[in-house]
Length: 158
Image: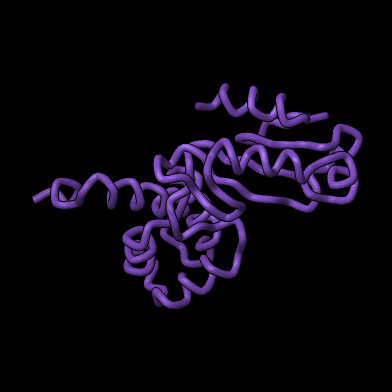
């Protein structure tokens, strides 16, 4: 019987990513990044499949997945919200922006809402200090934010 017919769609997707990197254990980080990119997180089943296919111990893969901040072992929201709390943004009112996002979404930094709509993180700098306070949503920078502008931007992503 065809192996692909025996495998679920999820395993096929993971296998496709692994095959793209020629099934080489030396590509482990890139494989995990690709899985994270497609799923917004690293499901336990994906780590198990990677371990099996690359013949790398699962505890080593879990260690890597928990070491790097880029990886998440829990589901993330469809929209990633980052609030800069660096010095330039902080003195221009980043705390008010963060408070507005927390009120609108019902989540705190490091959390994802129950509908998996938003995930919220604070960052120390987004590299555009002159635009502070800054909020980034799905990689798009929104500068010179106020509580009102913050609410308006979040409505775009609802």
